[in-house]
Amino acid sequence: MADTSEESHGCENEDKCTDNDFETSKLGTKEYWEEAYQKELETFKDIGDIGEIWFGEESMSRVLRWMDRAKIPEDAAILDIGTGNGAFLVELAKHGYKNLTGVDYSPASIELARNILQAEGLTDVTVKEADFLNSAGELGGFDFCIDKGTFDAISLNPDNNNECKKLYVRTLKEALKDNGIFAITSCNWTKEQLLERFCDGFEFVQELPTPSFQFGGKTGNSVAALIFKKVHS
Ligand SMILES: C[S@@+](CC[C@H](N)C(=O)[O-])C[C@H]1O[C@@H](n2cnc3c(N)ncnc32)[C@H](O)[C@@H]1O
Image (cartoon, rainbow, N blue to C red; front, side):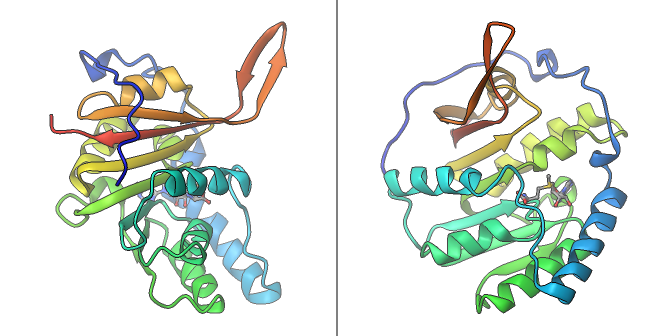
């Protein structure tokens, strides 16, 4: 893989992260996602609609463009964390990636992803039901981990979300090989907050440009898309 490191970032203590007082929501519960994907599964079976593409098609294209530039090999082991309908896996497979795994804790999401992959003729993609936060020892050896909206959902968990966020970082470190890449797209966290959260054991590589808006004389971004590299900590 090409060395695309542009900048590094250090942190002292994950407990000092400035996102620790975030409000929780039902979007942080397994029940919410299971119900949502049950409905999307029925719709897919009825009319073939694959459902919501979180943050739009461009959110996948910008990561794929970065992967092209970074010359991520086609046989790289790629994990889509909280794969939902598996739409990112479909795009990755169409792009030529051959070693793809998606996990989600919602059984309906996994059934939907399987149905969609099958309809696309993509039978080599692995999708499995797994709670990412309780998968220690089960997920490992990945060159590339993708998260689009899953860390956001986990951060909204009404039960002990601070612990969940820390567990997420620990599980991610276990899932990735040394020098493995993590690509995260988030609508809840700013670049600065993500840099604080993914500081210990990760090196910041690059921010991917996302659409910006202006409000009250200030410019902001509705989503943040960042690339990190796992380093030995
Ligand atoms: C906002 S959706 C994004 C889905 C997908 N990544 C996409 O971009 O379309 C959040 C996803 O995270 C999954 N999720 C949340 N917490 C999870 C956990 N602890 N383990 C596995 N999946 C989880 C949900 O089931 C849901 O599919």
